[in-house]
Image 1 (cartoon, rainbow, N blue to C red):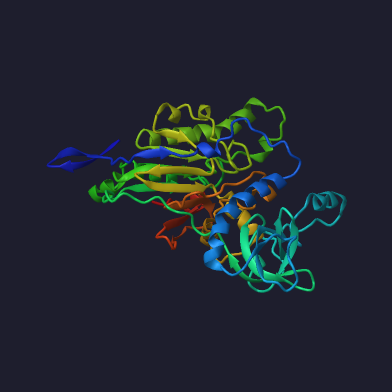
Image 2: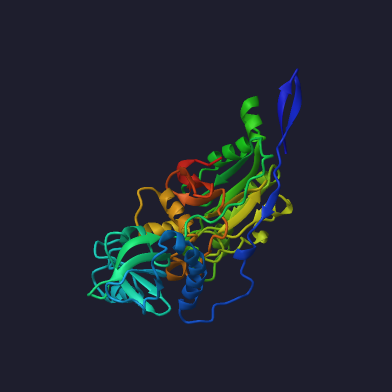
Length: 419
């Protein structure tokens, strides 16, 4: 697409900038494999093995004088280091037995937003056994089940492990940015459109479309619009009434109610795909599989937009590269899960923690039904969608890594996109 401006009474075209795009979702694509086991233990052991290989080489610089032991090899009063997976014992964490007792009980169970309780405690697990962690070094409210750590401490007479220090894997190495990047280019993130819900405002979204396609504003606005090289739609694009999804036979009226939001979204996406490259990720409300990694929305849902080679239907999580800048992000499920099982003053803190743990969704096998993803390289931009409000911060690592963290708010509630 080319934006236009008036010069001496004639329209002059402003050409949209371009960026070299690399699609990196291959590792999130499921190709017919199924998990055959009854438990998630194999997933946790695989993760522990991988993370131990990362943590073990860091130990000599951290505590060179201490031996590394297994849980089974602990001796009372002897200081050592143990590498294991955190299990968080939570008093308020819901279980299927609670659901069963609720059905049989006259008094309904309260469903809190956050399952934290003062009596929660942490347990460290490896292949040989498990031990309860004690001391003030590890605050249970900061951690969740599934995080792999190295802990320095000693076994007490009670059989607990008194933690004296903690080592996280930290930020992975980062791909260097080529020095040629000197001109401004922008990526726009938008999330939580919820087309079909009572909150969706078509006029508001049309203003957004007109703005980034260069059909609004003066010469300065159009110059900025021409610097947008990519758009990412980060989950929850449609909202379909749950009453229509019960598996019952639908009347023709109900069928049109079911398909209307997707048709409307396709019309809007077609305008965008005609103007610039766009990626669409599924979210928990979209017509995709529910557990992570969510697979791409089927292109047949978008007969208009999918005609364009600028339209990409992607996985959630989604990873890509633009001109050597690496991006990775989710539609928000991993952050909402951490918000239920731990605490932070801002949501962007959860993003930082997952980076330092080298893990996009440590709670996944426990509460999201799928082994999450180990971070092998440090992204330059790490984003999450469907949040209450916009938040951002830049974090830096010891080896000159820097990452921009972004929480993208729900557009249907805030009218806000992130550029």
